[in-house]
Length: 246
Ligand code: OAD
Image (cartoon, rainbow, N blue to C red; front, side, top):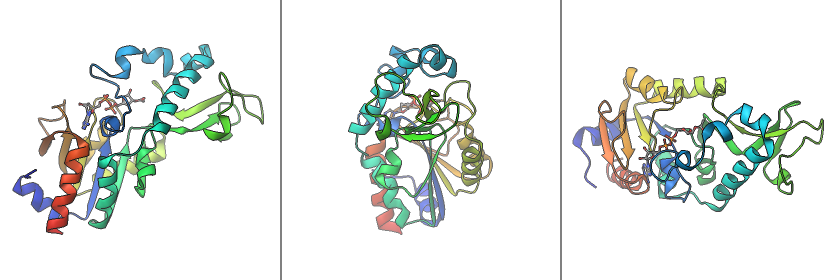
């Protein structure tokens, strides 16, 4: 793929880059996205499965939904897009990943600085005493598991609708985005706030915004460069470009 000259120039000079990622980066690993025709929110209702009220109303159902999603994630592997981001650490002083995904694939790929805005499906905690549990520890439960310390209900460590983002993670991520030279917005519809403030903050503070998506989104008209195509193809292409110029 041939890239525009101003982008190549930015790549040459950038010291700090950040990736703001969404479900689309994991689509090529076989993990369903949320919106669009095949999206999870076409088949399931978020208010019945992804809120604290829903969990208290029907913990077994919510647990079943997360067990289903955890299974997909565990069977998936990081794809060429995740891996290209890791390789880019060779070419810049700072490479950070700010992700809305809970699938753990950036960590499994080997990215060093990952900020998970919406939590991680492999972690769980007791809603009463806050004891943490790994997915492996809870493998043999049927229905919603109970805390071995206090018998409280155990929930996945993910952000549900109506819940705040982890404050420290969000404020650190926002500061990193503001200080970046290039901010890549990859595989996200960029409409779920407050996470979607990240590209705004980056741009307002002078970062060069590059969007990578299979189709135009709500933010395409104001980014500096919109690249249409699969992230598993475009990110390795950017890596090839870096190998030539850095
Ligand atoms: P969405 O499902 O809203 O958007 C996925 C985006 O990825 C779309 O814009 C697709 O066009 C794009 N896409 C699909 N395949 C791609 C590929 N191979 N390469 C590049 N782009 C591709 O998912 P998110 O933006 O991540 O929140 O959704 C944001 C939040 O909404 C999620 O974190 C989740 C959801 O409700 C919570 O659960 C709190």
